[in-house]
Length: 93
Image 1 (cartoon, rainbow, N blue to C red):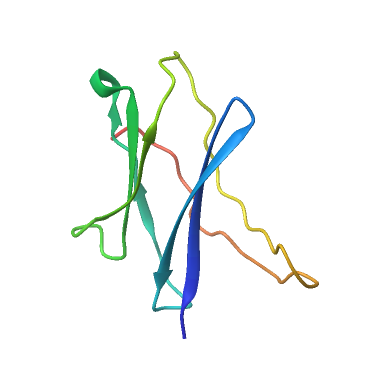
Image 2 (cartoon, one colour; image 1 turned 135 degrees about the vertical axis):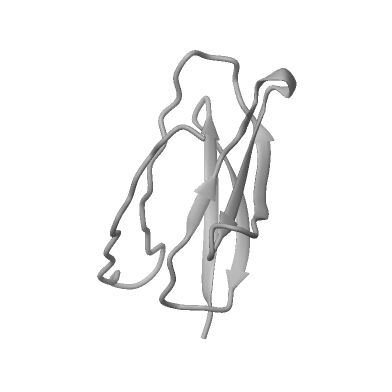
């Protein structure tokens, strides 16, 4: 089985999507978002083992002091489904 991972970045109420088909259903994922302030961008990478990372998104980042980040799950069609996020942490890289 596979799950479609979607990353959405929102800027001034406009959203930009990136998608990746991940060939696993139950997994732990690590998102690394090193800010490339010199380029005005942010890179989002994912890893299943914390050692090898794959880029999911490279997007524009408005040069501001703070940004909002988080995780959510959505079901655009149908009745939805249960979802659990465990061990969610945000920390400086």
